[in-house]
Image (cartoon, rainbow, N blue to C red; front, side):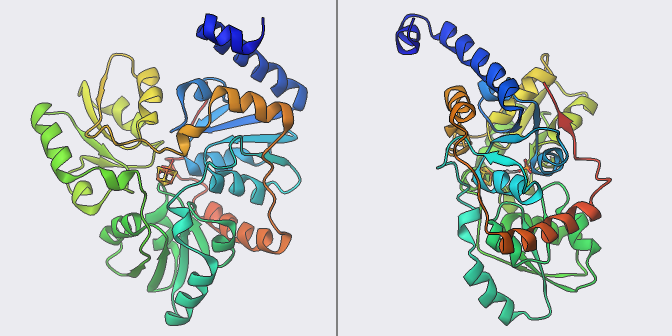
Length: 326
Ligand code: 13P
Ligand code: SF4
């Protein structure tokens, strides 16, 4: 039966066919399938590795695979290519970008650096290869405080996420952190009122927040962590209900890791549209045609690689670099 006929007749059978296709092509292409914690469940289920940005950057290095299929957004696939120039790195959906990463350009960063010549430039990995090439060191949401503290500079130009930069400030009073004006278009949608309303409805439920949330939301959090920090915190807690302050895709993994616990989101706006573009069908298609390939001009790649590798050296023993593999 043709696939479209199959879809009308039996969507479950279509999904099974697509899964089979993904597993078969993964073998044939010698491909390694990497997925971010926010991906659709059907994509998480076929991934070789699931994790946060730091874990996935590390996981992408040194696999024996010839092809890395990165199910996430463009800057993540770019990081994989920066660290694995000899491999074919595929982003299944070309349009899957990160709106926050687009809020900083290399030109504007060069201008800003002239204003603050003594500052070290720390770029959140949610940035383009060009911006990484202009930066001194990268960070992720799980190691940002550690990275900033590791630098001898007093002045830090933190790009592009003002909310993560604001969060880092709380732990680094000795530093002057100059914020860029970028933000995550998903995490900005949760308000302190949403959280207070949800806390009132579920008294005693800990609120776990991603540091991309606005500062007044972070003020209400019982725990703040990267996407890989949620599950370990829940595992240690005695509570049975948790308020989840990050993108909803996280719930799939949390439900799988903790089937008896209950997860509540403070707003149903917590959806990253571009993370959700990648479907099982697109993954199968990407493996078939090996598109969309990530290419980075070599000069930029080499400079961006230094920025990423400096981060990895500083955070090589970071405890939050949890890799959950299905
Ligand atoms: P993590 O590194 O915590 O997975 O965050 C990536 C991201 O884009 C969050 O919005
Ligand atoms: Fe970018 Fe925010 Fe989506 Fe993460 S959740 S990929 S930071 S827009």
